[in-house]
Image (cartoon, rainbow over all chains, first blue to last red; front, side, top):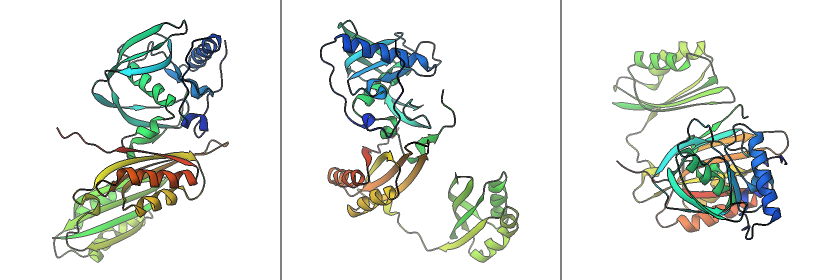
Length: 166
Length: 180
């Protein structure tokens, strides 16, 4: 078990595309544990991508359990080398990020989608997610491409200062 | 009817908008367009108003003077020439949103907007945020700009290169609106 310090923008690891994990080995499983432990250490955190803990690999964790905006909920899960298919219509909502703790922004994202990847046991998983869980998945996937929500905000008046982040 | 631009700047306090707009009603003005902002505790408002031909910039200033004194506002009223086309709305120009972020340093806004101007881009809206966390301050800027038709790709390359020279990242996305 390891809670890893979360990297903050402008850390360059957050703006570079991450590399494919490929084979799910012990190192990948250890990364999954770090992602889940670090995510769980911040009660408001619903997702964490490997670059956010300084690892430039295509892996993320999501857990929207108990979140007031959640529709679908698959509990805590980690996916390696994730891909998105069948995105639905976009909706706009405000989101924040552990790596940009002082700002939030209004971002349009598909309201539902299928995300496919490999779990820590190396098994292929395909999840249909919608609502807040879909947003969380897409937000984390952006991190794997070196993007943060600031890159997707609707316009200059869609970024907001935020005083507190827990 | 004649039009005037009006700007007012001063330390933010409750009641400024109410006082200014009340005085504008008394001055015979009608608000056409307005925007306001509070930056580091400083209130700023920019308005375009219309008024009957008998109204002058000076008469508006006279009616607004008590409110300006009370709230210690720097006030400027200027008459506007007849209708001037908005460069941002020129036919065929394409709307884009640019997101820029990176370690803060002087010259980021200039580098990006100068590169935009070099490719014929017109800034129509811009906001910046400095997040000073003590270690490496983050500068985030979002720009809405219009570009000449067909220029998006070369403009993006040019602006990205300029952004990279001052150590920031710039991403472009089309400012699309779904008309319902």
